[in-house]
Image 1 (tube, one colour):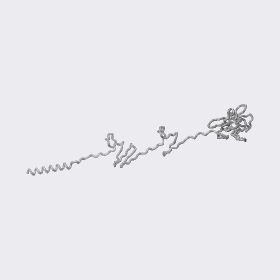
Image 2 (cartoon, helix red, strand yellow; image 1 turned 60 degrees about the vertical axis):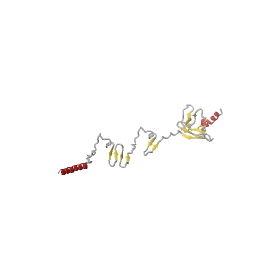
Image 3 (tube, one colour; image 1 turned 90 degrees about the horizontal axis):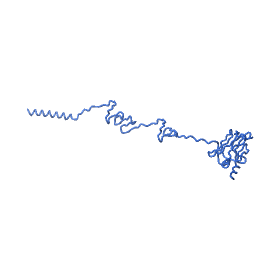
Image 4 (tube, one colour; image 1 turned 135 degrees about the vertical axis):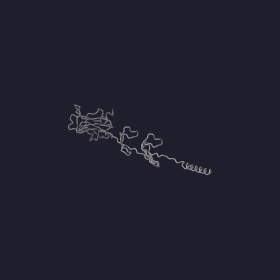
Length: 231
């Protein structure tokens, strides 16, 4: 009888041990779902809504960094667009609006103001060319050589020394082959030509021999230059 009870107790203990062994390792884990709420106490390494959001498959979308990555390690960077605004704080090497204009596509159009046109018209008396500004209304003829005002000749009244207008004033080649600054007027009575005292440059460098009114010689510049050369 005692042996039978001992066997029953032994079998009961074996069954209890089997149940304990069979239940070993069974652990219940509560599922924590993301309810979509932003919390300040996000643990290190957790999902921070200001950083990146897992979209499955190991991919993430970064909202604040301007880029997103998907499975496989590929990434996309948002391009920086030129808003077309002109700013005063142009960085070194940037476009300076005073020098060039950005027309898009990385190309630049440069604009330079044209140089001012030299006054007068080109004239030649057989030697070096010069520019002449002739004003019949003022009775003046200005000579400019290599950008320098050489002389201004003025038709004037002999008595009053006032300037007189003329019909025309030009550099004219005479019948003898020499050149003269000639004034054309309807009546040359009482008129003369005002000029610098030393006008020999007009002949020695430029080749102008005379000052004339209606082809009548008023000043012989060639003779003056030859006389100055012998002194």
